Amino acid sequence: MKIRNKLTWLFTAIIAALLLVFALVIYFSFSENREEEYYSLLRHTAITKANLLLDAKLPPSALQLIYHNSDNTLFQEEVAIYDTAFHLLYHDAVEIDKVKETRSMIDAIVNKKEIKFYQGAVQVVGFLYHHNNSNYVITAAANDQYGYAKLRNLKYTLALSFFVSIIIIFLAGRFIANKALQPVTSMVDNVKEITATNLDLRLNEGNGKDEMAELAVTFNEMLNRLERSFDAQKEFVSNISHELRTPLTAMMAELQLTVSNERTNDEYKNSIHHAISDAQKLVKLSNGLLDLAKASYDQTEINFKELRLDEVLLDARNDVIHDQNSYKVNIVFEKEIENDDFISVMGNEYLLKVAFMNLIENGCKFSEEHESTVAITYLNNTTILRFHDNGIGIDEKELPNIFTSFYRGENKQYVSGNGIGLSLTQKIIKLHNAEISVVSTVNEGTTFTVILPHV
Ligand code: ADP
Image (cartoon, rainbow, N blue to C red; front, side):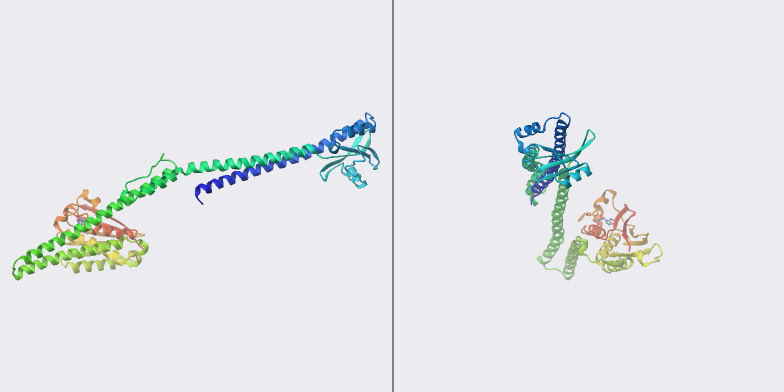
């Protein structure tokens, strides 16, 4: 069921329930009022007749004549007067006799002073009447024809107004729901127009204040993020093709030039060395890209286990030195490790090693002595690793960009690389709910600080 219909039915049902309660309260309170009023009318009529009979000494036949000559005898209040010993003193019409008084009824009236009850549709009141030092038992009975007619009328009026109101409320509900959901409808139309090719389209944010505007703003923010990531991916792909093309072109040019003429053995060797170096660059790039893809996974897809960071660092150091034996890597503990937990983290061993290798390699790569030092320390909840080098440093204005994929700083002229090392490292660090920051001074050195939550 559409929200529009749900809202309409809900609105109608709530108002209908309220109206129904309202109508029932009116009906029953009117009905109770009618009953009470009619009992008191019966009582007054009976007292008036008793007074006419007992005070004004009007002959009973005169009263009976009046009773018989009324235009609607059937619904006239019929009065009977007894003494307390059940002797009939007066009766409006014995032949009609709406209520058959009995000894026990008279006794009940004497005892209780007043009784009220229904006999079929006829309302009966019986009461003890004190007059001139004597007690009389008076009964009065009649059918409240007008009262019931009014009650019926009220019932029909209430029922009719109830149904008419429900129809009006339903239509009003539909109108309100349509009006309230109209921005959603136009939002849906707008969203349908947005595809991968026109991600620059945005939703109308309306007055910018209500919930719909909030939804549109949130949606637009999501589109901004999507557009940025689409653009980043496009750029990423074009960067990759550029990065792949450069060593490939160099390799091909070199090899073509070599085979174009007869060469000496040394020249062939030289050329093959260049080709190997270019091929190594390609292998490094494709490994980096593969790692980047792995690190971009959902955290839940990656295998995490408890690791000792010093062991991972040692592994990373060995691998770096194995690739470049001129590199020097020092690992120092700034504090004594009293408990293994202080330097143990939940992490993915392979990815952390890749991240540490990148930081160590950069330190060695960008320093004249090809030396990098990793200092390990810890606080209450975190383990801190500082990767320091005394190298050429990074210009302050470049610092915000160094974690961007394929970004290479001004100092790239000194060493080779592909610009994905730090962006990969940052991704891995984030995957481990850790932080990475950098401080650098040109010609003095650089320190990358990684803060990981320990177990
Ligand atoms: P690459 O090292 O392949 O160029 P990275 O992503 O690892 O790519 O680093 C990006 C840039 O950050 C580098 O080109 C360099 O300019 C700068 N950089 C990173 N680490 C250091 C460092 N230890 N010393 C100086 N510059 C660095």
